[in-house]
Image (tube, rainbow, N blue to C red):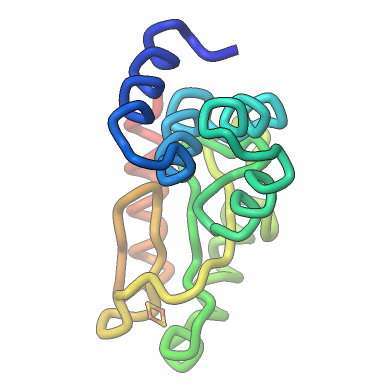
Length: 158
Ligand code: FES
């Protein structure tokens, strides 16, 4: 299932460490980076590469928020769902985003652009409420700021 080049590169990295299972998260992220999410085949491939059982890989994959076991949109919006953001307008931001995109938690817009997922603190408490989109954090959010961010992302996707 993995392209030859990616498989070889992962095998080389695994061969360079003392214990192959040390590389399990790296392998998962490499597969996710390539396919957009970690499919059942990806779980099996990871298990085979690092010498773990598919169940062990599955347990690990479902533990981490940033490992996606189902297809996600081009932009994954992680809305911080933790205490400082709760105090600073999390609900307004979350409702606004949900209405603007027409999706709820765990859903993806029909155009495949956006997925909305709650997440624990993204480390931007001093600029809460905050969201993380792919690897970029956005803070001090207001509905207007959300409009700007979403429009920018839509424009860059077209
Ligand atoms: S509580 Fe939201 S960024 Fe920390």
